[in-house]
Image (cartoon, rainbow, N blue to C red):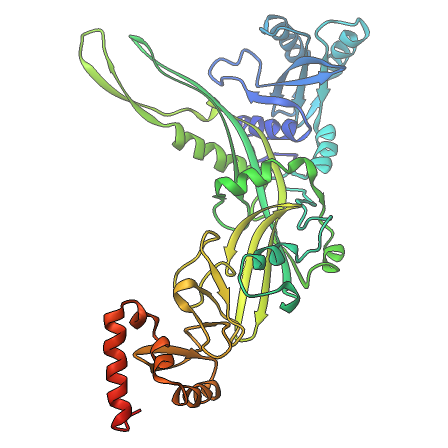
Length: 455
């Protein structure tokens, strides 16, 4: 089977656009297919600080002769670009000797518009470099880079320790070491330009000139755009990636898992283009020459959307679980060295209700290990320490409910309460001491009850 044999000419141009982008060229885009004037792909490169345009002719044929190279040379000369320009002819087949001689002569004569020739053999070498499947025209994802799963200047458990610092009545020294795991999730960071002009007989009715940047989960299934905070975490740290060394990270985390990229880079590009087509499609209302109002749906063509980069990287998802007596507290986040975005915070959350968030007050119950909000935290009567309503033993004294760690504490207080003078018993219910009349009435009542032997 010949190289890329199953692709049409237009599909071959799509593949070459992806190839050049992966080779590091900038502003890679396809010319308008309805009037390309010999220019199929246009891109730029920076050489010694000077930006140069490259006009590429793609030929999905067995043999390319001299006329194709000559035509491209003329097209380069007329191409509107403020700076140096050169050309390139790419084919899945081979070049004739006259075509090669013509290109060599341009180089030897220091022509201002030299032309480089890439044949099928050259494509095979490039394919090996970028992971291109020559038989289906799809570029595989070659990625072994990840954002840092932890801050190298701190212990891997530091984020958990910081979270527990907000909880009252608990010390870091009292906490067991959490179980720490990391899952390296594949994502792609996409940058694309959309440029489209929509005209009718009355002129331009709509124009799109937009650069889009987004990050998508790239595991199996349909790509999903990540949250804005996660996208910022990824894009701001792409310059500081490290090698994904599972063995090395296995020395830091208890469990390490690496997910695979679910699709090829070419498929993610197609998905991004379709997504941007839908995003930019809109209905425009305008008035025609006959003063009649019209509605027109403006949908950009695929050729109006130029994917500038698709950067694959692994995004570490770190999960800590801390077992404290009867409860397990999960803490999960996406990591990029010292930066992170929290995905699940089971520490700042009441175990007895839906109260959650770092702005609330939570207290640790040493009796059962619960973290509870203020509504579910009480003071143990004998010890004077916090206890949650979930584990407390309760009984009413002086018309007020008291909370105890266990039945032994309750029994001890019963004995203490029985020996109390009447005025001390009243003090067990602070609400009853708020007004003198109420206090007097209660004291009289308790006195009567004492006389008849009730208390």
